[in-house]
Amino acid sequence: MLFFTFIRHRGLIAAMALALTPALWAGEGHSHDAPAAAAGPELPRFHAVSEDFELVGVLQGKQLTLYLDHAADNRPVKNATLELELGPLKLRPTPHGEDGEFEATLAEALKPGTIPVTVTVSAGAQSDLLAGELDLHADEHGDDAAALAWKPWAAGALIAAAGAAVLLSLRARRQGVAA
Image 1: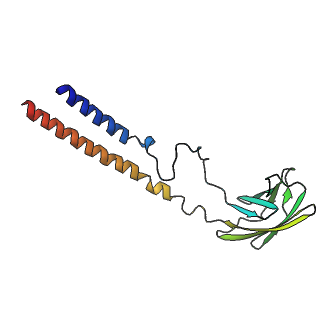
Image 2: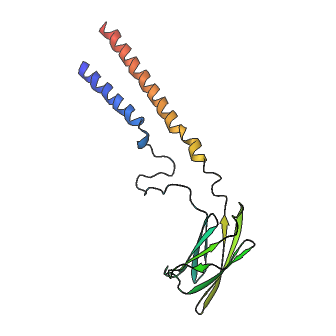
Image 3: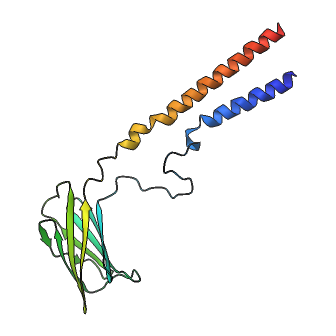
C-alpha cells in the first residue's frame, strides 16, 4: 500500500514539474515548428504591385532600399528607372547592382504616420505606376508582449501552490492513518 502511495505522489510531483517548465508552454501565435524570429525590431516597409511589377521598399533611418521584381515570376527587373514620391518627397532611386535593387537616401528622417507611396517604373518598353503606403506606427505596440509575459509565471505559481496544498493534505492524511 505504501508503495502505491509513493508512486502516486511521485507522478503528481512529475506533473507539477512539467507544468512549471515555461519552455514547454506555447503562447499565443507561438509554434515550436516555426523558425526562430530575427532579433530586433522589424524595419518599416511598404509593398506595391501591378500586373507587371512588384516593389518592396525597406526604410532604415534615412536609407531607403527598394527591390523590384517581375510580378509574374519574381525575377529581378534589370535596367529599370524609378521615380518615387514618398509623401511630399520626390526621389530618383539609383540602381544598386543588377539584381533589381535600388537605393535612395532621405534628407531627413520621416515623421510617424501613414505615408502614401507612388512609384513610376520604366523598364525597356514597359512602364507602370505602383502605389502603396508606408506605415511608421509599427512599433507602438511593441511593449504589449512584455506586459503580458508575467501571466505564465503567475499561472505556474498557482499550479505549484495547489500542488503543494495537495501534497501537504496527503501527507497529513497518511500521518493520521499511521498514528
